[in-house]
Length: 350
Ligand SMILES: Nc1ncnc2c1ncn2[C@@H]1O[C@H](COP(=O)(O)OP(=O)(O)OP(=O)(O)O)[C@@H](O)[C@H]1O
Ligand code: SF4
Ligand SMILES: [Mg+2]
Image: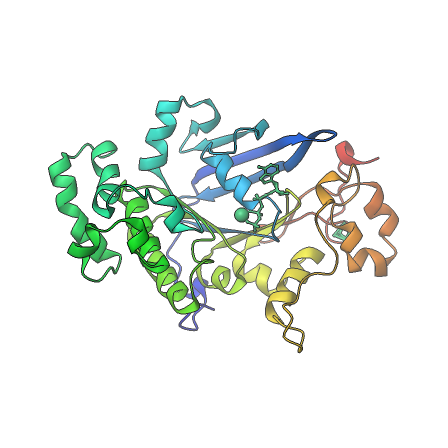
């Protein structure tokens, strides 16, 4: 349900089936004590034009590393060891630094969790919002600056003429995120990558920012990769969900189908924790166990140490011995689980 009690699919526009963003078999790793530490392992995902895909999963599952890989903004010691990322038919991994700069400001917009940290503390709001217009849309500086007040008004900033003169530290968190939205949209992108765009904001401001984002993406038919912990946000805004665990996609499919009838035990656990947010003593619920060392498991299903189904079904040996592949299911769904699909992934068996 969305913030007005409506499900996203009640209102979703007709979506294009043309993939705008395609990630194929992406592997990302960092240097570790015993060789390289893999943080994304064989991730395949696409976002169609105009579609909202939510990437969900516990902390450390690799959501931000996925987003940063798409923009080639990974930390310097991270390496994309293999895979392919294509945006509107262009190979992102083969672009030059200048081509990447052009892509980031114009074709792909980005929003992050800490808007104040993303704004330049030394430059006024009006300069930061106008910059993509003169850099990417080739407007004169004068015309670009002349448009800023309207752009700030469009994203709901009160007294936009005064705010345009402010520096980042003079803005509230909600105001700073509105400025980031105006900046991200000013290049007129086709894809928005939003990594926890409302997590740092208080609940009332979260709802306002989400409504603004939804309005803007509908007006512009903007494809969105939305990274969030909040399944009520996913239910309200996303067409499809991809669930990540320990650097892998474990389940994927249309939002309502997954939320109503999750197949993978990890997705089921995530959904039950989000529905029953506290345990009666006020403690936030979480899935028993930890994913901290799941990336390091050399074989078997990465979720098996925490999986209630493996324990209760007698499938534990199979789950420990070999990893299932991400199998296609009816209705455009996929799941990576021996209890759901039964194809053997030869490469990861031991
Ligand atoms: N600079 C780094 N050096 C080594 N490992 C890193 C570094 N940054 C992230 N990682 C590891 O990469 C993995 C994925 O991290 P990522 O930030 O993508 O998680 P996330 O799903 O976005 O989590 P969160 O929900 O907390 O934002 C984690 O195991 C994390 O410890
Ligand atoms: S493959 Fe086995 S351990 Fe992994 S999620 Fe499925 S039942 Fe659980
Ligand atoms: Mg993150």
